[in-house]
Image (cartoon, rainbow, N blue to C red; front, top):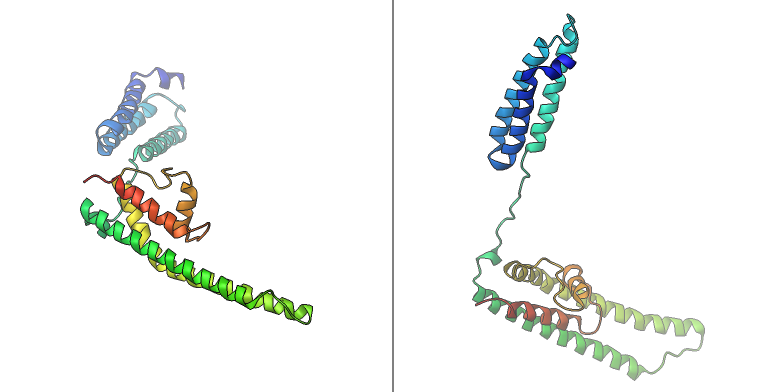
Amino acid sequence: MLALLENPLTGIVIALVLGATAVSGKLSQRAANILLLSAWALGSVTVWRSGFGGDDYRPKSAGVLILGALLLLLSYWFRPAVVVKPNPTKEDAWSNEELKTRTRSLSNRIRELQVKFNHEQHELTAKHFSEGPVTGQTEAERTAAFGRRADEMLDLSAKQRGEFVVLRMQVIPVRDQLLKRLNMEKGYKLVRDQQLIDALIDNGVLAGPYPLDRIADYLDLLVGRLPE
């Protein structure tokens, strides 16, 4: 083993490996592989000529195979990371002016939907108010009457979420395109309640007072930062 380490060819092998390490980041993967292959060939000759293992060829063969395996792993480690470029979207083709126009139109439709939702909720509340307090001769009748009102509220909520889903599918690509052109990552804290805004858009959660107005305000804020 000492003879192997003292062999001048060992230094050349090490130099080739270090050179491959350098060019893998500076030049190309192919150049690094050529240097590693040269290091393996020269290293194999060094192992066979060093007297390693005496007359037994098996230690020499094992040394050559181990050296090859190590250099193969090193070559795999040198491989550059694969960068997957996202496919272009139709929004990428829009000019800034067109994106502004489309965003403002979308914001108006979002606000109109919020007005519609408010009207529906007020109508249902007025209906329940006109019916008076939940009454009944028995506890079961009162529970049933209360359950009917709760079901009406849940049905309205589900209906409104369904309507918002259709509009939300238009909001997401427009929001993403605005963030892309402004060099902002999704989740960038542009407003104080950014997490709520992201939940409204990404998850379709209609939470808090006037959630659609918040989305429209957020889109207007983004489009206002877009250059001409």
